[in-house]
Image (tube, rainbow, N blue to C red; front, side, top):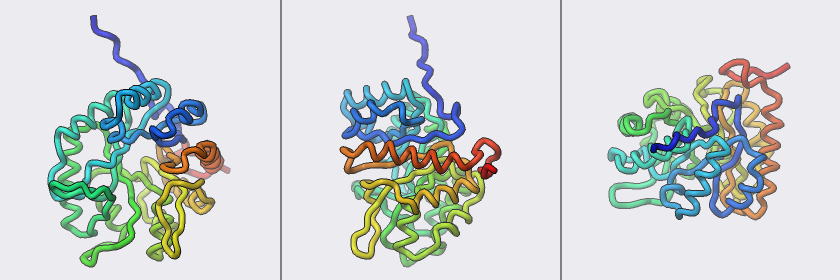
Length: 293
């Protein structure tokens, strides 16, 4: 006798969901604070390579909260077609948790035979755009949900770059049919390190292209801002969030925390701060996010 399929909570039941990312080091704290979150972001690679206990915890949480699926292992910018067995495993997990989309980084993380263990920026060239579109066509053939790409932090640029960052990003999304996961801490760091206006960057994004948002807290070492994910979200990032909501209507806002997880109350407080910003917007009124009177 076949069991009935599990019906899990669905993200689209909410106008805008605020939550955090699953980290095995904080799984007990996440479980205790589950009522504080509307959504949980799970890194698919953590699930695929996790222990049976971690996998059970993730699936149990997915019975109670909507889950969105993030990735770090795809390397969409590498000029080699993605591994189909990996994509099938991703697709199985996406289906199991009934995720509305699958997000990855606009980067490359490896070359044939070598994992670089870093998010490396793509050369902003016509060739990179073609590679990305070809790779994402393969992804889309296996993973039957929309693809969402995240802007990364970068500490160098390539001498052969043909476009500035936001122009390259928008072309990459439009030509590949992907949406944007706008990481506002990454944007703040890049703007500080490379000397451009983050608000102008946000204003250059076509309305409706942002499907999700990341916020986090970073640090500074000397003159360089670092994407450390170990501090509370700054007021500067919350201001960028408000700017974003003037033009975009994301599904989710995820507070990222990768270190200093013993201070998990700071993650809960950050979610409350995010909700305070969201409260100033009528996010159900239009796809462009109209500010409430």
